[in-house]
Image (cartoon, rainbow over all chains, first blue to last red; front, side):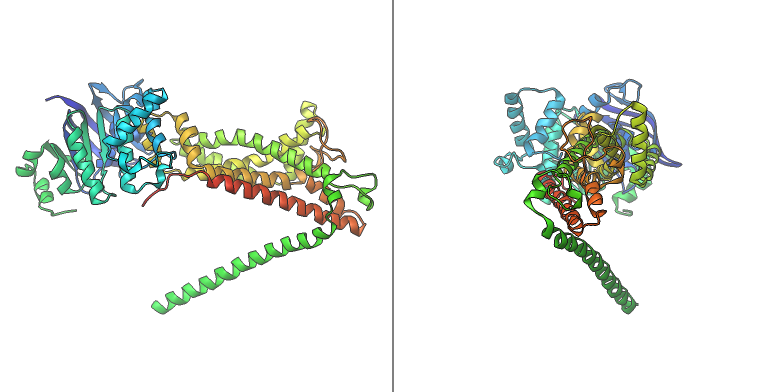
Length: 251
Length: 285
């Protein structure tokens, strides 16, 4: 099995506190990998390391290696824009850009280098359809994206994330703020598109992990406790901590 | 326990009502006295003509020189300060996001020079003029007033840009944007209404200040027709009219103050209308 992302000896400090301790994980290609764990265990930080959003936070000191397609993203001279473009991000709360619904996606297309109004128009419609948003917004494409409901905004963010044509999708509790219908749609969408993408989902919801995961990375207090295929993880956990977490002993 | 909490609540509510009412009454009195005294003296002639020979002794003429002069000077300085200030504020909030200490130092310095009295800017502008060989002129006035309003322009834009959520930066970067794209496309759009408020605040300060233009822009009874000639301003015009011993001329000072107030009102309403046309990303919690 091919690995899309390999993380070696990753350590993250915030001041003197160590947020991530010696992380070594492998994330297989074209599967859904769920990073599972209680709140505050470093799941989101681990996710943000992967597209170097940690750069934005001066208090975070990152060391170690993250190899994406066998290239270390922390290597000097790495093209960060290109790296980030190869990964679509879906955050906990949707952040539509302060522009129209149409331009939210057209902007992503422009960054990807697609010029020409015709071409853009066709693709915008296509991505809206992929995110199951087209029918709802067909008549309001020129309205500000902020007028959409949260569920619609999150689907718009999904469409926008897909529009940069990534290989990897990083999702940070993407359904935690959503209504059940939008949540189910996002989960199902991940299943549907997984043959073409490597998907990493952060969640603390056990049920969601059981539903969508092919692989699980279980974290606790900044450490990876256990990782492996979902089937083994849920049916035959090796570590004590994993067992008690699965039984609902903490969180 | 419950009772003391309730008493506290009532006390603070009454206290806040009183202080708010107090402020509103003071504001009302100021505006009322300006309107009351100014309306009587205000005439069409005053708005449409420049001072004739004995204007400051009660003869004919008007303050058109000061109205036009103030508008030109304040617009010039506001535009210049905006062109300098916006990139600075964006730089502080997008490019220096990892240098928190440096940004805080810049904020501290800006707050400090914000508090410097305008007469000091006037003196500084004058020194600068002597140094580069410029005489009292519209240009010198614009440069001095620009320096004077820059701190308020930068800091009020900075305060707005600071509120742009980190998640929006993350979302933009994750699409492959670079820093200038984030600054000029996303941060500015997200903050349009706040930026307009900053410009408005600066404009109000620019058009209302007398001390910084005293030595630098000078004063004249003519309309401005060149950057290199002195220009009249409303605050100085009000000052000269109030200083007159003739009661009629003093009344005209109030009329001039009324004109100044109305100009600020119009600019303010106009900017507010402009700000409402732009929508920023709503943050849902």
